[in-house]
Image (cartoon, rainbow, N blue to C red; front, side, top):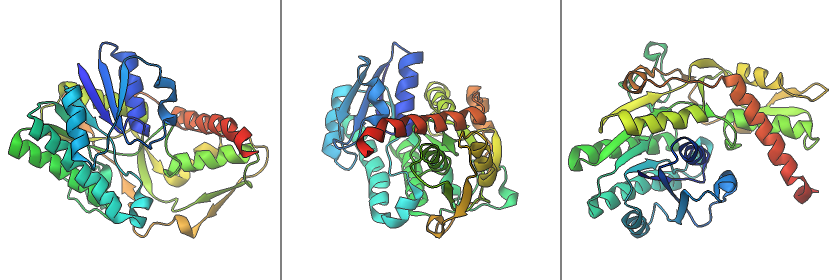
Amino acid sequence: MRILITGITGFVGSHLAEYVSASHPQTEIFGIKRWRSPKDNIRHLLNDSKIRIHDCDLRDLGSLIRVFGDVKPDVIFHLAAQSFVTTSYMAPLDTLECNISGTANLLEAIRILKQDPIVHICSSSEVYGQVTQADIPIRETCAFRPVSPYAVSKVGEDMLGLMYWEAYKIRTLRTRMFTHSGPRRGEVFVDSFFAQQVARIELGLQEPVVRVGNLDSVRTFADVRDTVRAYWLLAQKCPPGEVYNIGGDITMTIREMLDRLLAMTNYPGKIEVRVDPALIRPADVTLQIPSSDKFKAATGWKPEIPYKQTLLDMLNYWRQELVRDLPAKH
């Protein structure tokens, strides 16, 4: 089998490549990245002979046609995106172009080349927006109420996936993944942002203050390593044209998550928690509790990694990364 991962240098893409290489060694793994993308997340995979990486840009249809023509993938995991909600408020048009136009180009390349891969379109739980208690747990039939440019872009990706299945029978599968974390998670995401700050405090790189935004939002958390295992099962077991919610099995407020993280620190003093108005979004999604019943029934998947382990691994990741950077900083 030949798989292609868009965004292989990203958080989820790097974990997916790592998982497939270790668990399915007969699989040929190809990845695409923009020429300027940093390789930090895949530095440990660069000598893996099973993984081959191509420079490509989703906004350039010609580059996609060239790569897909060379690779001829059996499965495409489309994970590349502008994925930061806060950034999407600052650069809405760039977010829409990257995510919607990029996905349209990807699907057009497949159509033009008359290829027949399974195509995983990675949508997002953010498409549901601010739900009510009556919507909990959130199912795939819940209405879209996007409240950020990022969420709007993911609605566009989601619907493109459906349209190309209905119109051209391109074998798309759509997922709406809920909050997922772990080592290598970008510092702009809430639990990783907190973990980075705690690690910086431990190393004396910042004052003992954790800056926070809204701590009352409710999230259901999953580990990225469970996430990529779910994506693999999706491509093996699910019929084309379907859409699935995927989420963890532990739900808490952001405040409770931060309390768990602070309990893991080795800092000997008191750490203050301080609300920073700059971290409050123009519109926030404060309630995300999914039903993953449809996906579990289709694949038999269930989360296996406790969120306590996720948090500890994320904190240890930042401890190691910050120490790695110390010679350059001092």
